[in-house]
Image (cartoon, rainbow, N blue to C red; front, side):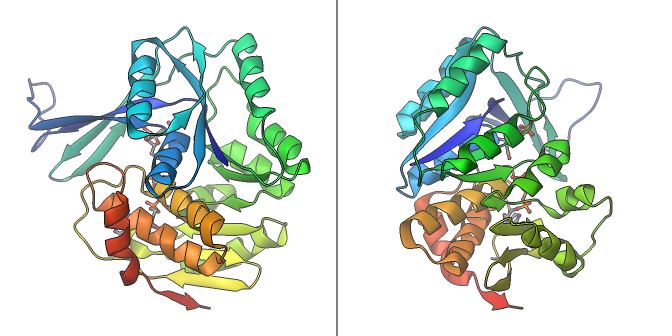
Length: 304
Ligand SMILES: Nc1ncnc2c1ncn2[C@@H]1O[C@H](COP(=O)(O)OP(=O)(O)OP(=O)(O)O)[C@@H](O)[C@H]1O
Ligand SMILES: O=P(O)(O)OC[C@@]1(O)O[C@H](CO)[C@@H](O)[C@@H]1O
């Protein structure tokens, strides 16, 4: 079973306008609401590709009810802790000129609800996977991912961490199964900036040398690199019309771990992950299985 954790889920409210006129009344050309948050996106993709998953975390209020109903209707299993505050609404503004995101802060999580959540994690068994994805809200301990990684790593659970900043810096020395920084997040980790994937190679190698099993560095339409025990792989970028890049990184993670859990080949799982990330970029919502399978044959890897 692949358990995903989303500490601060959202409803992603996608709003389309030709060009935003600031200070004026704007009317939406289209609008959509999707269950959001990084771990939830991973679970939604896993369910679509037929991998057993349960989404964990905290939900509350009318938005939390909407979120859980939407997941249930898609066949995504979940077991959230209910809190009093409303699950946040994140605005994804689409204009002809590009995308702008405005994410909510999210409700605060009291200590007793954190304890309930930790209790739910006790069901994990050796061989399960635990995906910790997204930012840690300010009401929770800032080292929560590190604590969970250490605790569950010792019990034979493969822990994937997809986060940034201090939370990412804390986990890299505790042997996560996978991390997937984009080039900005990797740059932040090493206090530098990257303008090409090639420049990231020595840094990906450093991370692997610290005992991380798989490191994927993504750079949107410039491709991605996988650093793993048998070498470094570079992927091309599938071509298509980009509709929405929100959740492309989560889709890459889901495609990789989902395919790996079903088929066992690491390079193939990377190919599938890239196809899944691309398929999401070419779709209004997250990728469907059909779109992933259409994109998959376009993905090629080069071993460096
Ligand atoms: N414009 C694009 N064209 C094709 N594939 C894309 C595009 N944007 C993203 N992808 C696919 O999705 C993967 C992840 O994208 P990206 O590097 O933007 O991750 P991210 O920054 O973590 O994304 P996010 O935070 O929006 O989920 C890429 O490696 C690629 O496979
Ligand atoms: O505020 P966070 O937790 O950093 O990111 C949340 C979020 O932007 O990430 C997902 C895309 O990766 C969206 O579904 C969601 O709105």
